[in-house]
Image (cartoon, rainbow, N blue to C red; front, side):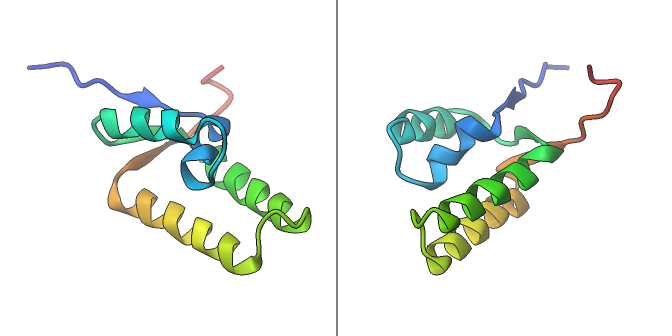
Length: 92
């Protein structure tokens, strides 16, 4: 039986995949080089939504752009690109 390699990506590294930032190309290259599913924590959904809401409040994104980011992230999550890993106190 062969080993399965799983990779984890933190929210701060994931955000540039969805919004143009300095590290966007590097993050895209990394994600496209990995075989799904890529692990994210159960906190990533909350952190992602919080970051998008902050960008809207700061005038960096419109509501329409924010909805597009949220919908694209959820589509990627539902497609199996990402898999949520439930973090609990025993993880640490």
